[in-house]
Image 1 (cartoon, one colour):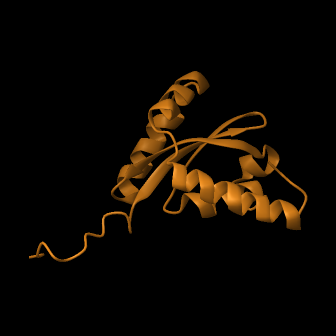
Image 2: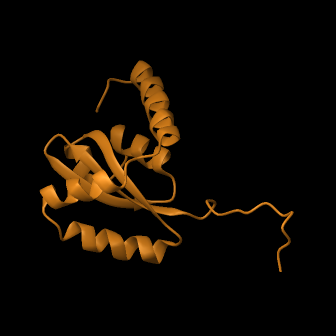
Length: 117
């Protein structure tokens, strides 16, 4: 039983379903680290689709308590049309602190490599 004085650790094992706008279309995936996964997509180390169609923007990310729930939501989102996916993303904007981390890490990589997204 936890006491009121113990810190709550809610986000340590959080999983996300995310939507990327890519050069030609959208990409849906899951991760437990948005910034790291987005960097992987941008540097050509992500999914095969994003290696051929680099991401332009992270449109949205919905948090889930575990990987199984995120996987189920990912499957459902992948069944949607691109318009429906973008509408979903409007309901789950990326938190400001995540957006800042993504842009900072992306700019660092741009100075090292040619920009890919």
